Image 1 (cartoon, rainbow, N blue to C red):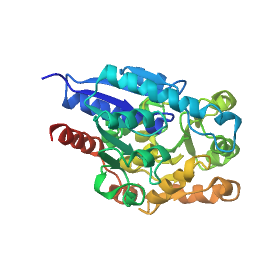
Image 2 (image 1 turned 90 degrees about the vertical axis):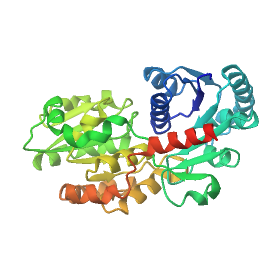
Image 3 (image 1 turned 90 degrees about the horizontal axis):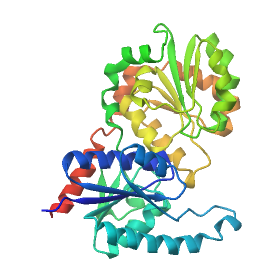
Length: 362
């Protein structure tokens, strides 16, 4: 029997890329001789991140619609047509047994063409408010894997499996890495550590707020691990000179950063929400207002309902940050773990892989 071939498409943000890589890794463990090909959008971060994870990737010429900008959208119809022809060529050349989409515009043409070539298909939706590409694809794919309950308001109920969001394998054992993390980051074990996560590119408003409140953190005896993002590192790296502050562009060792944290301040992307629920630490969520359908707010609201997360809107940061920070620092971590356990789905990747396996063998 020939090895199974899997084509995986998703990108634009880490929230689409990392679940795709996690699914590929789990499929590789299940089918050791399987072959993989990722498909992404030219110029997007997946074209760099996927090869670093050890998988080949091909780019197609596609981009999302830019809201409120006619000039930026003028090439969209042409890009869409070209991406469909590129997808036909890639699929006929690679001949996969299964096509998987994790969101982002690159997954649209590939999954659409795969369906009409009679290739089995699955999409994975990370957010509590479904993205436009996945909403469109859900009408034709075989399986829709979701991370939140109540997603039948977006997708056909008979296609849905409640699987959870795939997370990095290393995060499943964070509890036992506290000592290693304190040593790695050279932290003072007698002080509380707050970790700030604004995403790989960074979050302007969060970074400005942290910088403005550094004297307060110092007064409270709190030490910071501050991932300010690629776009803002040059602006904020000077704060590395302070004793209680470590500023990073990006941190690869996410298991250690979660292990080091006593509390976190974070954006509310779907992958972040799933990871935060899994590691079970008090968290202040500041959703990005600059995302489609305000989905980060809906993600944050879903986690806050468990009782372990606080939500602060960007528009309220200046007036409420100090008060909410005080609330964050007194949350009991043991209570958070209990609350978040109801929400976390540590077997998400395996749930998805098992469904793929069932579909392949049916």
